[in-house]
Image (tube, rainbow, N blue to C red; front, side, top):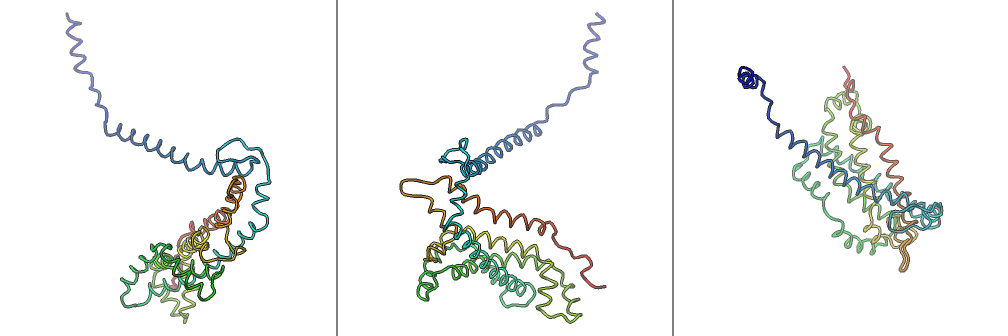
Length: 293
C-alpha cells in the first residue's frame, strides 16, 4: 500500500514537461516550405543555363538537355563572319549609349542636387515617371523622324538608347550626390576650385559607386535592347548581336548549338563588367579625411 500510495506523490513531484511550442513548429515548417520553393525556383533557373552549356558543345544539339557529343564547331560558327561583327556592333552601340547617358546624367544630377531650380520636386517626379515610359510607344515616332533626316544607323540608335536610359540614371546618381556632404565642396571652393573641378575631382569620386551603377544600368539596357535596333537600324551589317542571334533560326531548321554558343559569348561582356565593378561597389563611400582641418 505504501509503494502504491507513493507512486502518485512521486508523479506529482516530477516537473511537468513544457507544451510543444506551436509557433516554433509553424516557423520551422514555413522555413522548410520556403527552402523547397527556393530550391524549385533555383532548379528552374539553372536548367536553361545547363542547357546553354551542354548545347554549346554538342554536335547534335536539340531543345532538350542531354549528354553532348563534344565539338567546338558551334563556337567557331558563332564567331565567324557577320556574327563577330554583330558583337562588335553591340559593344559600340552600348558603349556610346553608356558614355552619353552617364556624362549627361551626372551633370544633370549634380545640378538637381546642388542648385536651386524652380519646381524641382515636380521636375524630379517627371524624371522618375519618364524612366518608366515603354519604348514601344516611342520607337515609331522616332523612326519617322530618323527616316526623314537619314539617321537609321548604329550611332543615332545609340543616341536614342542613351536618351531612354537617362531619366533613371539622373535619379540614381542624384541620390548618391545628395549623400556627399556639402562641407567637402565648401572646402574645395575655399581652395578656389571651380564648379567643374569640384564635380570631377571632389563630388565625382565620392559618388563613384552611384555613377558606376548608373553606367552599368545603361550598358545592360542597351546591350539587351532588341526592338529599338530592329527598327532604327536598317543596314544588316550594323545590326547588334541581339538581332543577329535570330539568324540561327531558319524556316526548316534551328541551329540550337550555334544559338547556345552565341548566347554564352554574348553574355561574356556583361559578366566581365560586373566582375570589374565588384570592387567599386564594395568600396562604397570614403569620406574620412576629405575635409581639410
